[in-house]
Image (cartoon, rainbow, N blue to C red; front, side):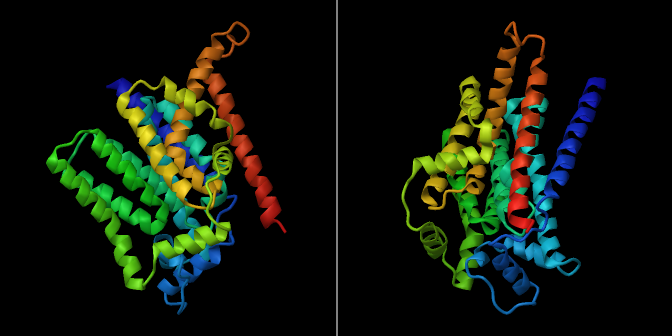
Length: 359
């Protein structure tokens, strides 16, 4: 009993430190206006009756502007967006911690994962501004976590919750569509019976229904947005592996080389499948979407960051076993790598802040 109480206190400290760092990181770009922001503000004003028109493309992502429009009755619109996205940021960090505990079977490593997530460059820059990126990050992570939990308890309520979360997520940011193939592949891999497959189909329909009804009611078209916001904006569609790899490296910097090590060290089949299915699902979206940018590649975070931390754990243990480095404990090596990562991400973010906003 005492051991469980002590572990509970440690977890409370871990979660509190994650949330505190998230609050600190969010302050750099809280409520900042980006080139995409005016369209989202226009949608928010439409919802609260301050505007008569709305951005056609941004209206396909109505969730965050709608929530911001409610808060806009109390605070200015930029602060409203900042608060909504900050809440999603905090929730994302917590869910990433819970997901990583399941994947790594270690609360300490899960803490490293969540700290790495909340101190990553795309989250720092785009997480609390007048944007919808945080909705994409949050709903992808939450969908992945709920799908993992479904393997332990296949109740109808679990299926309903996954479908609802993905449906809301797509209204937050359409990249959450990537969670559908991940969910379907996960279900197929479990060799479910006929009843479960019917639940799977129903879950997919529940996930698609809100966006279909919403876009149809407003006469909007996701395919048209793909053409204008994707192909035309990128100057055409071509598959460029170098650009995709570059965006991944920008998203996760020096965490990337540790991810393959982490995957090779993983022996649990269900976890290996989780990583493979999430990688395939997100990468397929990244390939199809013409714009290659690290803010999109960061959607790989539920796969890349836990694997990277597992790889770092392996490397730190091996390094401490060498005569020259044996004086340093593996935990200290991991902390040093984490400190360097956090410092490097913040340095990059700060240079962006000075270059773009301090004019």
